[in-house]
Length: 169
Image (cartoon, rainbow, N blue to C red; front, top):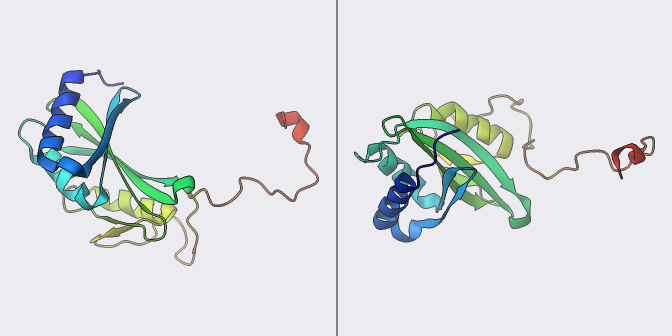
């Protein structure tokens, strides 16, 4: 776990709000980490600002992964960025419509995002616009579904040979 630093969190929120205004949709602390939700059109600008700002220096992309919100018909991307200088990590989230899942690539900011974006595309179907080589990385090229979406039941509902009483059902 990283140390909680409310002053650093407030500095990040303040700088982003002053610079990007309405592009910042919300912010909260979840599991002792600042989480900021932003509009997808601004994701590149916001992450570039976080990396290049002399006071913030979020110079390392720790994680990039997908999310599926079936109730809202949305897909999302979560970015964890870390400042080695300040020993501080934050989470940035953005969402896109399930019907047109496109988000700008950040491979121009962090080249390491290349494989993370490919994996997210492979499992969630999010198309990273401007990505240099967006193709499946773990699943077969012929596959048309995206296995991490919550679109399929977890088990076969037509089975009659199982005893659910063992599982409290």
